[in-house]
Length: 23
Image (cartoon, rainbow, N blue to C red):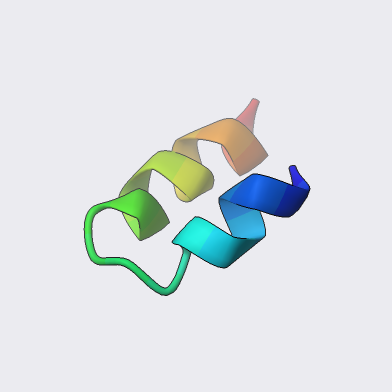
């Protein structure tokens, strides 16, 4: 999840992170 946090800065990735967090 560390890498995901870094990608959160990128647009679109935020959406992906939201889905992962949902799960």
